[in-house]
Length: 217
Image (cartoon, rainbow, N blue to C red; front, side, top):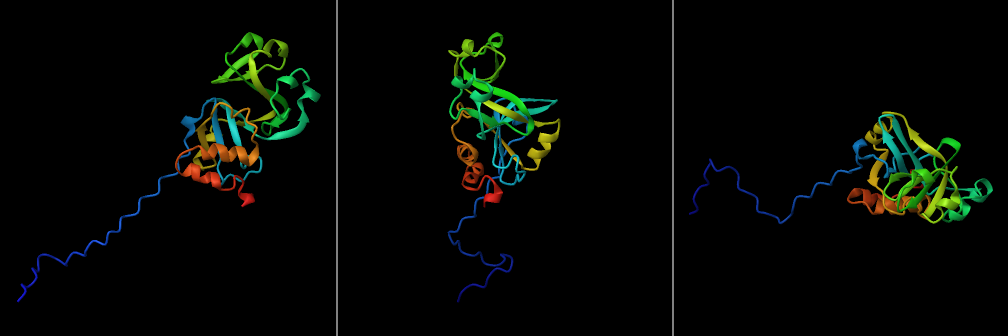
């Protein structure tokens, strides 16, 4: 006759079923304001619906207590460089047009180039790595042998103090490192956005399969 169960032992333990507890989904890491610096990229998250910046990749030129400045990459216009700055058109990478750098001061031209060394006197001011700002008042012939390519932007993107911090906190931007070639990439629009997102880790990489612009979904 089987022994009576011990009333102090509690209910019988259920046999193991072999099922494992599902792993927690890792948090989406988009960086923070401390990650923003000259040479980093601000990548628009799918939740950013402002048509000016939806689906964009912004190369940061300067970041300080006074604000942040950058240029939108991969947004070519129809304006030929040779029609406005004929001396520089032969040094520009294809397509040889102005790129729309952002909504601020769209009548202002900013030029970025890649070069091994900076030379402020010749018109090259370092930004980050091999990327430099070019003084368009300089002599292009002097710089011709020093540059591996350049791109001219009309306008720029700017954030006042505290503005970018708020947008990152809202999840509008991810801050990621740039790579050599991003500034002069032949990719534009959603293609550049997908490439940058696709080389990230975790859930950011998964987002590369989603529409860069929510309106395109």
